[in-house]
Every structure is written in C-alpha cells, then in structure tokens.
Length: 312
Image 1 (tube, rainbow, N blue to C red):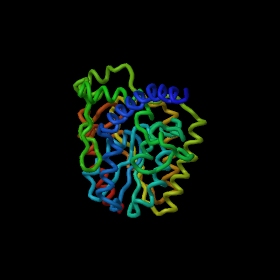
Image 2: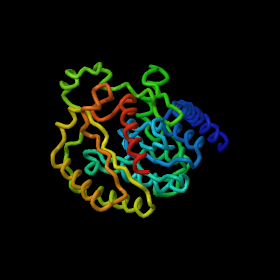
Image 3: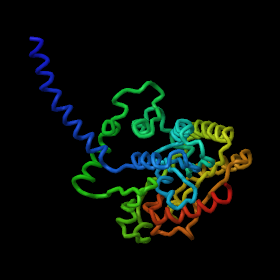
Image 4: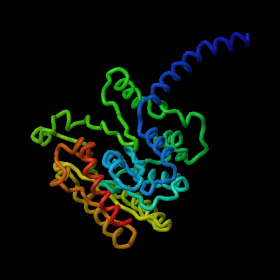
C-alpha cells in the first residue's frame, strides 16, 4: 500500500515538476538586466568608480558606455530608496573603488510606498548579486525566477518566444540598447497624438504618512553615504513636456523642499536636475512621458559624465 501511494505521488508530481522546470528554464534564458549586470561585474571586477541606483527611469537613462569612469547601473523597474539602500549595503564590500553614488529623487518619490521585504525582485537580487533583501533566512524557492511573479513572466515568455516582440539587447555595460518599444513609438512620436492621450502613469495622490516614512529613510541613506565618504549625485531625470502639467503641486513642493534641505545640510551632494529640460530633450528622446529611450539616454549620460568629471 505504501509503495502504491509513493508511486501515485510520483505520477502526480513528476509532470508538475518537469513542467515547472521547463517554464523556469524559459524564464531564465530570456535576456534580463540582472544577468547583464552580473556579466559586466564579473568582467570588471572591483574597478567600478560610480554606482547608479534607482527605478526604471534611471535604468533607461544611464548607459555606462558613455561614462569615462567604470560605472555600474543597478537601477531596476519599481526599485525604491529602501531597496537602493539594501543594495548599497549589500554590494559595498564588492565595489571598494566606488567614489560616487548616483540615485534619483523623482517628482513623487517621497509619496510612493517603499518596496518592503516582500518585493518580488528580491529573488533576483539574491540569485544574481548574492544579496539577501528578504530580512529572513532564505530558502531554495527564493532563487526561482518564474515563481517570483508568474503573471509577469508568463506575458514575457509569450512576448519573447511566441510573438517575438520587444527583445532586450544588452551591451557589454549591461544597458538595454533596444528599449524603444513603448507608447511614443506606437504613436509614431507624433506630438499631437501624444498631447491628446487621455491619461498616463503619474502619481497625483498626496500621502503625508508615506512622505514622513520615506523621508526618514532617505536621510538615513544620506547619512550612510556621508559617513562612508561617498560623493552623491541626486538625479532628476528628464520628463516629456506633457508630464509637468499633471504634477500635483503639493507633492512637487514637498519634494523640492526636501531637496533644498539636502543641499543645505550635505556638502557631498550635487543635484543633477534635467527634469524640466524640454529644450535639449525632445519627443524622439522618450519612450513614454517619464522614460527616456536609448537615444535620450546617450544625451543624458553624456551630460552626467561631464558632471562626474567635474566632481571627481
């Protein structure tokens, strides 16, 4: 009877395990920024002098190819200051030559909740960078990719293997040089059509509780950077002109007030503000209202490089 039960269990679970193994293989075989960064780090060792943190806005804006000093961009979609801080502390010993840390403070950065210990990308920080963001002991499943966000990766698998769309192409510096597909490309970068868009993603909900929590951690991050003798560049990435009219004035005012306090109290901080630069950054430089495409990234990174050469 016991042997029969074991046999039935194997017959039931074996196809499930094999099926998951196939899906996991498809997931990890797709190009991704974590693997590209890991390859870049392994090739460069501890030579990096600049470290970039932040969300997808920074990920798509900084192409290390155009910076003279070795630069590592560890920004990633939806990555907030709490995750930036964990990344910095976790990777600090591996990057002993980093002198400058670059991170963003977007328009509503202080009024969007932090990622927290259950952020789905924690699997990837552990799998590719060896950094535990779970705030607990880790298990085998914590390094599995597909289980981290099944619906997201099901769509990516469909896109990549079946439809053949939106293929990510990473250069030797870990930057996706094929990140053009998006709302603006779909509209042919037609400014009239873009202006007529009824809505786009922007936070317009003030949240004073989140503001207080986020700014507390933000100053802890700045104190850590100051205590460890890092130069800091706070980046305000360019936004397309239609974005600015949708900002909530109170959210913007509070963000700007924190930046003013920062510049007053931290002499190691430089503000790199191109957020409203609608003269040098035009419609063809954008992926959508709040993200540059690789053409815009080259412009932005070259401007950033000029600043880095001035403060090194």
